[in-house]
Length: 226
Length: 226
DNA sequence: TTATCAATCTCGCAA
DNA sequence: TTGCGAGGTTGATAA
Image 1: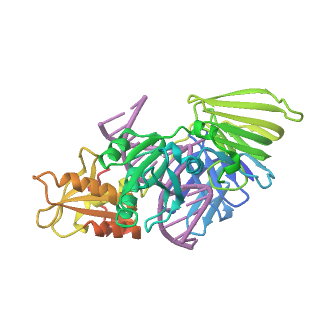
Image 2 (image 1 turned 180 degrees about the horizontal axis):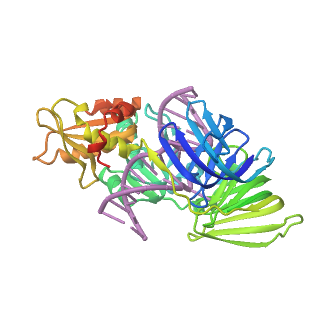
Image 3 (image 1 turned 90 degrees about the vertical axis):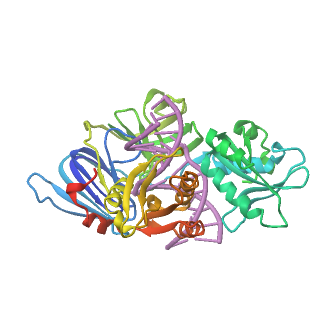
């Protein structure tokens, strides 16, 4: 990885065109050729960047005071031109391969936990399968309730209006199947936005709020699904 | 901005929990207190980070060989704990305030161009207004076609299924207004995903592909809307 | 401050 | 490769 602090101008031409006027910025060049240009603020998103894989061509500066011009191009033909006026710092570092991030608490985990604890949805409920396939995508959980009726369950970390739309499409489709119909719908989430709740009720979809910590507390590692 | 290269472990506890095993990484600390932890690969997204505003507390390492422990906490109570085992490089740089990025070619620009060139949608068409207000949000363009019928136009850079859902909700609402009904719907985009096109046709919504470069070529700077 | 929506989204998975 | 959905989404704008 190369690390530069330099006064520079930047021009991106690709999915859009964008320009950065001359200022002092950080330029990171990763081993895979990707380039990040950061200012001393904002969040993790760079001001400008080029995603790998890409090639960097360095040529001498044209205008007075420009040290060099970097032309970074990727396979899609997008280009990032960095005109370097002044280099304040430059260093190179060997980092090696990163073992990567271990995550916990995402939707997949919620789904695995609820699949193992479908009785949270009602007494006598049983899981038919996770990722029940349909022509328009998989239903998160397909269950049977206490009386044997089919129930499609859509799981979200935070349920918003598009989650209701998604489940509505599934239910429309599933209810055309005489072997399944009638199919109930349940929207299960750690948090359900008011608008989503209103739309769900309007469409006869039940809402269930999941307590992630409590579900994890009842998790049995021996029967864990991943 | 501070720049570090160090062997470190990282633990994030917040909206989820995540852990990075010990490895050599880049740690950037910006002036606003935000922290980015980058590996020598991936795209612009860091392996782990903390968004501003946040406070950094440095304490001595506990285990053998750990130099120091950084505890970064933000207002929401999320924490990032960086256990630094070895510092390979450290430097600090004064960057100043960045003038910021100038963009071109985003949806707002498409909307302005199409508003000035509604005849692209059909002969004799005229614009009623941009951002036509409704109870569920603004319709991008409200037009009248050659025969005087109302047309709601939804503009996207890339139209996907949720764009069709959005326009459908607008049309449902608008068609309840006897002063407007019947209202036609048009989905206009630089690129329309096949699924979006199928769903749109199924609902009687017309699709129009916009050529941004050609539209910009016909743009008259004198009448430009922004 | 909150809600909504776009994004050079990125990232991961599956067909 | 492409499509699709999630994201610690982030970022901008309007209410």
